[in-house]
Length: 611
Image 1: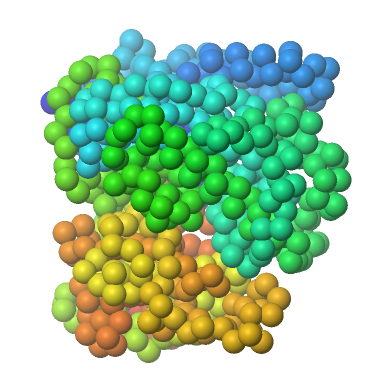
Image 2: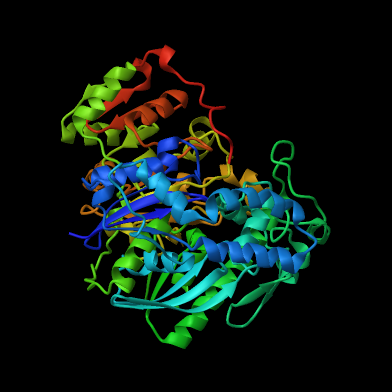
């Protein structure tokens, strides 16, 4: 039995995963354990968890692989500073001490850290380094249901590459083309994330959520920043940016082009300008991704597309590629960002380097992305008792029935079941659930439970067999990475008067039979649910359908703004008590907020740094 430990760390979203004979056993992000969102540090807790889950000591692991090559990254850093000199000395001086202390001599640094897990671990001879974008590509292709695929990866930057095209066939994967730093679609999108007052490497999905409230009137101005060729390849005009050498993403020339300074998130409100900026950069991003998809489909003649890298989390762009039927089939890695690099590095080592045979699973090999921590009923009850929680234990059928009944009465429920999800999306393991038919649910969940901006959309979880009756789509979307429109017979068209409303005022208009998950442009970010990947969640939605006729429920991640998704029963209880959630369903236990000791209530509004 060969085991491989994959690690990603030191930029953002540190994570670890473990394979046994090429099979994915466990994977988790460090943030879930430290409660520090996007934690970039060495993933000590995540490694401890995956080793324990796989019943292995570190000294028993055959190979350890890191998701990128630090020397190449350092080379890019030095060459960039030389090319832009004397600009950039301040950021160069800030970066150097950390590189010299830790990052440059990473093998030695990793070895010393790994020894903390197991004193019997004696040699660094089994530590390997993958390439950043190869790790992304491998994470997308090897777990996919395809024997052959073209793989598109796009993110901020790895060592040098920012966008790559690879071809995968059976157990082989080869990168064919690359776009190099500083030309980066991920960094372009992050520049606008920064400009609209959101946090880089964290708030990009907010920019995407804001886009439907605006009009893409700045598209032409954005195209002054980026030269897009017919095949989707591009070059960024560095005169407008500061990320290559400075401590910010954009500069005065950028501000002058758009006529405003970056929004101060503490003091400046989101205005129509920011919504229009969001709509414009989203449109340009979609155009580039569609052009890239068309050109690689034509060049390689392969029917299947796999996507990874941070840009692959742009589910609106993914939905457009799907809608245009450029490829017959699309599969997207649910942990598409750097966390998934730990998995990709391990898979690349197993298949590409070691030449092991690959058997394709027609569904996929990600196990629904339920790869994290798990708590049995005894552990849950013990934790809840130790906290002082008041709970009832129900039989399975009763638990499902009561939970569905509560949802149908517009109660907000914390749902903690089975293994935790790997990747940024909650998929029915660590979720907050609500009734999509309620026109108050979106606003209430955002403001009273999540403590976040009211415009933020929620996703529908829908029974796979009912998908096409409600949405204009008929492909699996288990990882909530595709956007599609609500079917016209479920829509409620806005009046001319309502269409004139300003941006977020449109939020309060009931636009469909399921308003809580219908965005202002009548789209929704869809998760399809099947019985074989998550029986408990499937049974809950089925019971809700039985009671209401609606096979859809609201699903958002179990956390508040700025907090990582809950990991343990204690995390879940703290979030439950610190928000206006009505009920918590955890294992076979059900907790009613009204029956809890008020002294256990936490002030959750200030607990986490806003993202």
